[in-house]
Amino acid sequence: MGSTSAGSGSADAPDGPGIPEATVSRLPLYHRALLALSRAGTRKVSSEQLAEMAGVNAAKVRKDLSYFGSYGTRGVGYEVDQLLEEIRNDLGLGRAWRCVLVGVGNLGSALISFAGFRERGFDVVAAVDVDPDRVGRTIAGVEVFHQDELGAVVADTDAAIGILTTPPEAAQQVADALVQAGVRAILSFAPTVIEVPDGVVVRHVDVASELEILAFHEGRRISPLGSAG
Amino acid sequence: MGSTSAGSGSADAPDGPGIPEATVSRLPLYHRALLALSRAGTRKVSSEQLAEMAGVNAAKVRKDLSYFGSYGTRGVGYEVDQLLEEIRNDLGLGRAWRCVLVGVGNLGSALISFAGFRERGFDVVAAVDVDPDRVGRTIAGVEVFHQDELGAVVADTDAAIGILTTPPEAAQQVADALVQAGVRAILSFAPTVIEVPDGVVVRHVDVASELEILAFHEGRRISPLGSAG
DNA sequence: TGTTGTGAAATTGTTCACAGCC
DNA sequence: GGCTGTGAACAATTTCACAACA
Image 1 (spheres, rainbow over the protein chains, first blue to last red):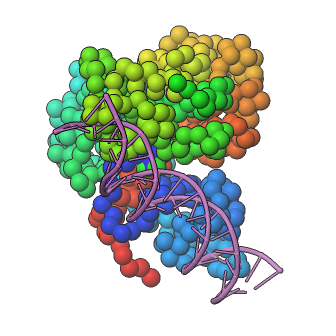
Image 2 (cartoon, rainbow over the protein chains, first blue to last red; image 1 turned 90 degrees about the vertical axis):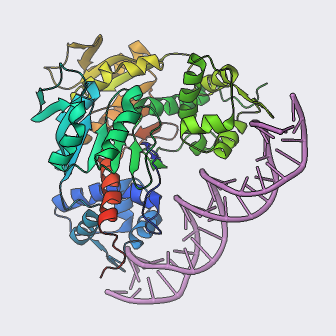
């Protein structure tokens, strides 16, 4: 997951023989849990507790963490701040990540205003749109430029991540422009497939698909099917 | 899952020995592709073409579809409208799904206003919030009630799906209230683990986690690591 | 001929269970 | 005694490759 993923799913990652993708997708859960523990002043945590907080099981926690080395103490557990630091480093959260958002509609605006990003180290440093009514505005301190200037905006801000919140028809050409501008990580909310060159990572968030998956399960509950045709 | 996922992930599904979860998560992709083909007037499609449109490979398409029976013709391909109808039924999209949204902040408001839901058969029929300033308002035709009335709102609207867009601190108690009210499918945007009884399906959309996963890959590109400590 | 449907193989991910260590 | 780290067993998923068949 892709995913999945959240509904998620992603293109090939250029990581060679490194960390399993399933493990990578759980690192943010561990990170979040450790952050809460650290803020609460907790010093030690067992794989069992961490698993509970992350909503997975303890064996998975230990296996996942083992890919990064041995950070625990047998008979004791993990030192919260040390493990947090390790995962922060693995996730590359020691720095602030600059993001450019493309498509300032309802969702795009909401994402710009969403404080949770900055807290976690992701700064939306600029936005672009094609609509002249939106260009020139400032949303939550983020200036909106014209989409034609995307290349210059990426270059000026040195953004590493593109957030794609356009309608699906525009998504591919925006992705092309982002890649052209040097962006190699894209988070797309557009419900369409995006083709990118090797080395560029795309992750998808598709809310309607998530609802459809829920509907699938809900529909099964009501009429279990089993035989048809 | 990749993404997902983008970031996704879900609780146990109550489906018995039915369709693999990985297959279920791809049905919306096929649905979307088939819808586009149907609208374009295309009558037949091969697993190869469908795979291209859905961003997967052909073997996967054939295997996935085979769980639902034989809808293709050897040497020819699949009949677009017939397959579309089949997947519509499987996903339970023949009907409109009523959704209640909890938490009318930036994201919640944006989701209410997002027309894409209704197009795909998901109606947000009511919203609730704890903030007195928000209660009583109407957003894109959707009335906002007080969260204390959640049970009554669910009962009155007969909503089957809950959309959870509260801050993480409130997520668990809202989920409890939704379950209490009879909702058995929840789409949560809150970055926290949610516990629900067996039979209730939760899917998570966690945007910050998706960004962290992108950051992980991006960080690896720059400094491949390989040896530490 | 061209494409599906599907067993079998390969790969990836999860869980078990226990040796090793604090 | 308790908990990590991990090889081995198991399960899920993907991919291969080809027989079946319109």
